[in-house]
Length: 303
Image 1 (cartoon, rainbow, N blue to C red):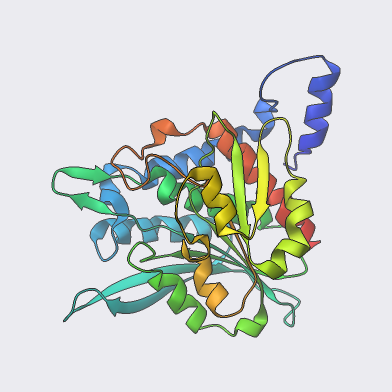
Image 2 (cartoon, helix red, strand yellow):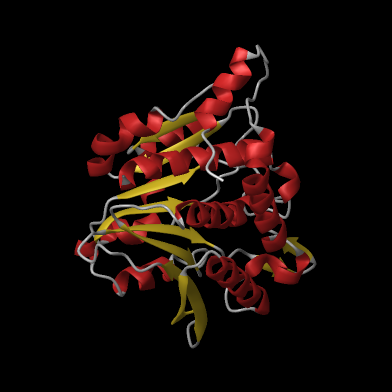
């Protein structure tokens, strides 16, 4: 069912329903339940924290591949190796989903979200709900959203592995592609929205900030603010951190190849790389609203 969100909002406003969040519950029930189901599944104990080169990561990859296949995509497992220790290599796998496009000369928009996390350390389990089950769930949401919609670009959805160990999955992915064929990378990493300060931050390269900043900030509404920047210093001032946001996630692999990128995330999370990064901290309605806004933005790109 195609849902006109703005029409839903107008109906609610016309009825003078006041709330801190305006949602059309019935319309978004299916999407919201899938987001919650995907995050709940990926953070469950059977995935053991999804550490690369473990049975947990293999199960996560299989789950993601199954979800993408069910949406009608052609799914490929891209296996690669990277140095894990001084003497040994580890095996990892990216999951790549595409659909045939009538426009063979059109450039690609590549969506990425890493599915690996820290696994188990002693008796402690690191579920990685925000980092980055949230990004994978958003990737699957967007894949579903665009599964049957016409678009002027070739869309590729990639769940990357071994991001936590050094962006190895995205590095390998980019090495197998012609960067000249890529219009844009949209990287999804840590998308849980802070309820006290509901913002999504978009970190862009200099070329993309000039092109997309107005559109991204225009996604803001009474529920959530979208903030776009290409300055690490500006983000660090907001969070009192010292992070090179250009290198912070898989978009850096595209940046090194000269590919424009947009990294969507929530910024700083106090539960980052902690056992407390669990789904209990996720407001799924706000999360779904943020992802639907990103879908709205991508729709404008692909018309």
